[in-house]
Length: 402
Figure 1: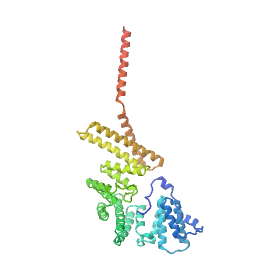
Figure 2: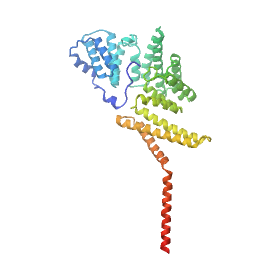
Figure 3: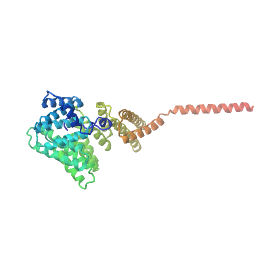
Figure 4: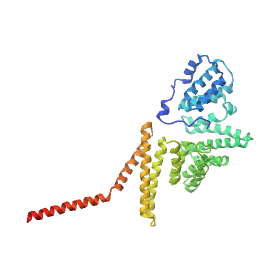
């Protein structure tokens, strides 16, 4: 949603967080004492450019100067204040400061509680959708924010005459509906009406945006939870078909985290081949992703296990070919997992369960591959040498006896 990238996880993101003692007010006070000849509009324009060119720290400085001007000059403009606060929130998201982003979005909500201000002026549904994802409480609180955003999107969709604009809005509405589905499948899965709510929401999402990869992916997740595996596979295949031929960076290609989730779902329904295609593309685009390399290793491990099962059940399988293919899968698995662990250490990654599982798999792979790589000829040579030594001893004893 919006132009901000998803929140970054882990130590790197947290280490860049600003001080929690109201950083906006402190820095704004410092900057406010410096006379600036730039107007609020110019400051916001500069902040936008800096954000889009991956210079969030500089963007933050300009946005705070704009906010300081708004306050010091007593400018009564909801549109300017909204634009400034939403931009400020997006910058904080880029910096990984969820608390500051949430505070800025909440201030924006106080100025536009129903999302009735035009989206171009900082109004609309965006702030509600972000607050749903940034909620500290999660569960019902997240659902409440999502529902506010969904209501705004439905109203906007009804008033849009342009088919292209409608398509964009439909996709955003479907994504919000799928967001609620995910909550009812996790935080609120214990609710008695969780399954019926999921079914109702995914049905609406499919009606709104049936050609959205993310919608189809969520549909597959729901079907997996209902043990309707064939339908889940069909939805996942349809989702991939929509974007697999598109180049990297195309708007039709799902975001990196969505495709990570996709690979997990594919593995869950035993579509390891498709999962590897997704993961190989991911590491081509971003070769420092610990999770992508880990999942690739785990997927190849499962592929090898599947070959073992096939060999045991398929009497017509060509044993030598199956063994070679299985060994290749195991070696590939170890390579992917080893790379994941190397990146884990270099990045101070914090998912200990991932690390523990990767290490366990590598130990198993090392043991199995060492056993398989023992050279039978060495054993034969050793046996021949032992026989020769034994024969020599016998001859020596015979000679001594004579």
